[in-house]
Length: 78
Length: 260
Image (cartoon, rainbow over all chains, first blue to last red; front, side, top):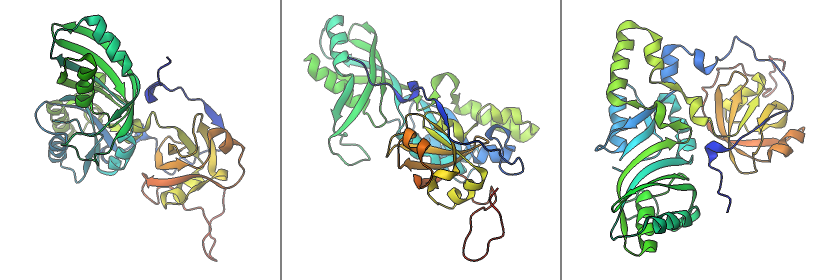
């Protein structure tokens, strides 16, 4: 029986509908953001320690990095 | 339980929706409650591949109704006495504790989850995950030395979180309309990825590779490619602040900007 392909194994092609250029005076490539901006639009791939809940760990990150908002992708039950 | 936990900062908190539904991978130690042969364990684990039914446990933060979850793969790794080590790739929201219990039922002797480590959450894998104390150290280094390289050691752009979500790339002139919540229409679309189905979650990107919004596809990839007008995707979550790109749509009687 063929297994269902995991989302990260899906290969996608890029289809082109039209061509256009982008104006360098607006926006910026994600990897060229200013430090403050890269924090603001950033994600941390954290290695959750055993013990505290995912919510607690996220709260620690918020406190350590002195941020206003943090969220986490999927609870790892404690 | 330990392992990969993507933490979104400030504005990027809006991408969690995409992360929650993304697939996960775990390495798990399951303890069986009786003596069973390795062949038997291997066979039973394979039976759990594909779709399974689960009712969320008593201690859960979601409605306890029966739901289906996909198991992409369930690979037996090794067995030592009554401890079974396996790796599982599954849909977001699969309860591994429940899975172990159910495997135990099929085995006949019962089983429970002993240890669990998440090795993947969507596009984030174990190989480059950072520990809390390393994060705290690099953050202090960055604050003291103001050298960006320390920041780069632990923060990734939020676009990374959308790596396995199909994307549509749009014109500069369409960006600000989408930032204001307008649905994406065909003329704004430049490029798109294959495999988009009507109703699937997709990410709207600028040509610079910035995430603009999360949206729900109103047509398939092939259909979108051939459309010359009409709504292509309904915007669900705007990710880019308004005003990042110039406003290029006409409103009311005042038209001061020309479409490029």
